[in-house]
Length: 254
Image (cartoon, rainbow, N blue to C red; front, side, top):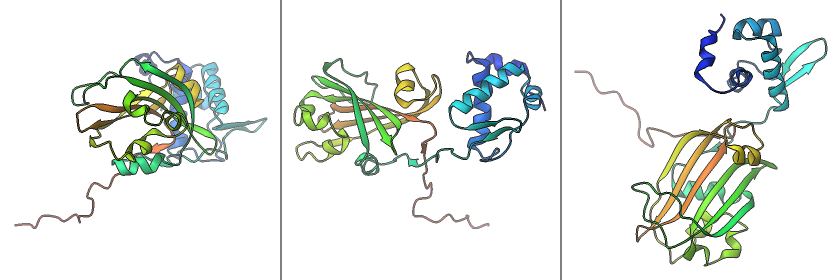
């Protein structure tokens, strides 16, 4: 069944990127498995209701991303070298978050003392007297999976500035005996990679990201840690047991 050309008009994204996104989803969901031969150019042209040049551009994009392999005279196949997806379970409590990042390999790419304060929404605490801004990239198996844009209150950063510039900040703050955390709100949204994030994560401009905002608020209602984390879309999943330790029981019928 062919797609209606009108569906593409709802997005300003270039046509070939929209087509590539649909094909990428088929690989992610296992509709096309590693080693499978995908549909021919002619079949894809009809199915997506686009010109053949658009199909070629989409396939080239997925080849550059390592998802497809073109074999002369045989066709195009799903790569056997697709990275393992969804290895990171997004934390749903503070202890799990600390454990998640404690041993992460990170690279600081920007540090600015005397930075402008982060924008704080209602319920996110009051601003500290000053902030240091740190941007870092976190790696797994030598490949980037998240970009962290972090504001740390100056009086916290000054406690161990050298260590903060070389290792993950959250575990360090949690180890400080003289710091009391009263609240730690976390918000998860879906975003897209801006030029800076796309460059650091080595992904395409405008590709989806999982955006996590985590704030540590002390016992004086001051936001001492404000992190905006952009995860590469293929690395994470949010797995939660909705029933917890309880057993699901049907109500007895009357």
